[in-house]
Length: 347
Image 1: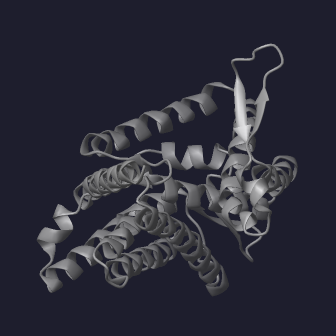
Image 2: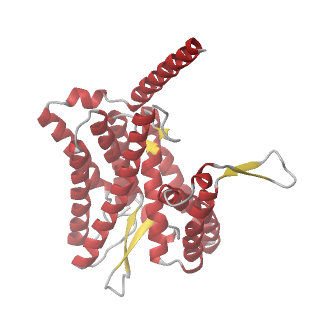
Image 3: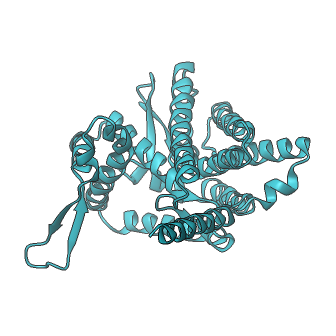
């Protein structure tokens, strides 16, 4: 997070701020469009969406607690074990995770240029002595894993900031694409909890900043600066993914009502405003700032103001993706039953 990755600092140049804001907006917008594509496919085919994890209110309430436990565990690991050893293990973990994330991000585009057989035919690989263990994949997935492997090897060997950002953006896209809040109530609970979480760990303890500086993995985006004393400014992936899934929910709400991206635009504007305000306050006071302190009010406040102005508070609060999905699934089953009956009559 913006505040967790930086201590007292000098004001960066305008060029650095532009890079930070622009890169963040691009990564979040791509993730939202990917999730919109899933919704459109769902509407057209009456088939379930791709594998997605939907949060409940209970999950949203527990999220800050689980996040705090993980953060504190990492802090203790770096305190009692060798930093190089912990980062070596984390590098191996993110090497595999990075290949999977970047391959999944590139796969839809790569499929367009490959033969249909490469996209559809499954190849089954079984472990030599453990035949119960098998992996299924297509040739197009193999092709997509090549650039993923290249960037992971580049990052593991040189820790280059560009390789770090490519992997980080792919994590953001996959996170926004695969996580669903389900409803705006759940989203408000999650953001409120993380709002308090971010403020506590940044302002009242050294844990967040310490872990961010010790954690050598693509969990943050790096932006080169002209300051030799501080060569990079940083933005945590959590400040992109967490507000991003709320913005994506607003986008799907617009799609469900058959309207233009009005609430999406409001939420996206609030996110942009919150991020810019974070940078301004951080440079004004030259001190670490929890980005969610500004982003959460910006995103939630802009959507709340918009729905209040339009008199659509009830429809927005009543929106539930789980009900929408179940209704679509039941409609699909009805269509299939009718087709089966017509086939039987034809026979």
